[in-house]
Length: 483
Image 1: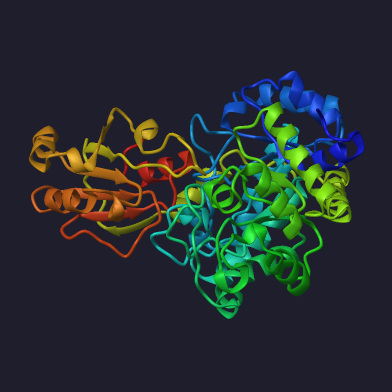
Image 2 (image 1 turned 60 degrees about the horizontal axis):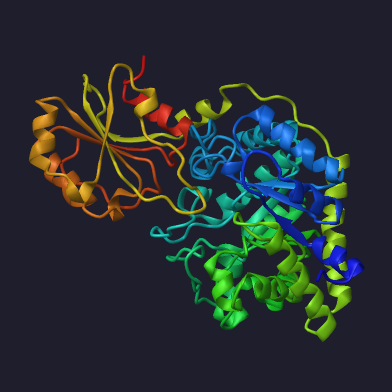
């Protein structure tokens, strides 16, 4: 039996659902008409621009002020270009170039593309300070490891996105950059004092709020001094006392996907996680990618039940739904950004490439891309130099299963270019690179977050600070391997 219609509509007004496939099913549109705040688009919802525009129009037929959200960070996390790789570099490359005007222009261009497709909320920018080189989930999604630099670019990104009439959502509060665990799989712990957070992790959020960010996303991380045993998503000390009280944020607090293990493990399931997040002060609950009508009803029912048994105050849910509605209202009156040059992203990616050593004389090299696992935020997006090579193929190999001598025989006296992401922590990666470099002319192209590791004996070490389509083209051009 469905919950009370008035309370059900109120509960639905706090939820960002999702649906499978390129066409919104009837239930997804019907729920919008019944009060659902909106839907998040994932890669499986995106085939081509015309199809996305048709999908968002179908959702607006359910209710004109529906929120349509997407994770479009550019760089390694892209939904619009998940089949090819993004034509924009990500935050790490923008941070290396260190021109906030360019960052604003790139984000304005991203916003203009989203607005043209009917998308109203970008779950970006990532404003985490990547203070841990081994961070498995942030890395190149961050503008860097320096709080001041990250803050400057975070503000620029917010201004750029919102100039296009698309909500900017600064994430992941109070900072996911110091973790060495992935909150998609577990609950990471950042065991530092609030003073450390204020100095290291929070300046970019302060800058984003000052720049007018309409939304902030929570992190499923544990900061014992503030959150106890649970994640920040369930902590009033973080969402109310810190974010709203100390930092003066008055916009909409959006949760990271509640289907993530960092939330479900702590709460005992997705629906209980929704209740805990609302009680803590979250306003808009992102359920995740694996959503159907039954799950939406289950979550809405749990929220209604929690109001009934006193775990949630009705006024708290009304406040949350009101902030979600205010976010939708803002998108109707927001501005539009001018069209950007079509090669903007590629030009910025070229400026980000850093070369240590000599990249000259690479005549018909053997190009090998070493397999690297992707994190769940980025998904399986194509990467590497392959699409940009003139008359060359890019071999794909697993480092731990590759014999250096056999690779040398394949090269047949030609130079070797090894392409990887986070090579320093790739199983078998460092050993393979250094064994090859001891016997053959080797150039390394690092397309992940570059560590301090530099392999002995290589001719050159090239850092792209990302693995987008734009980053791949930039690297191939620097190496002289394009037409």
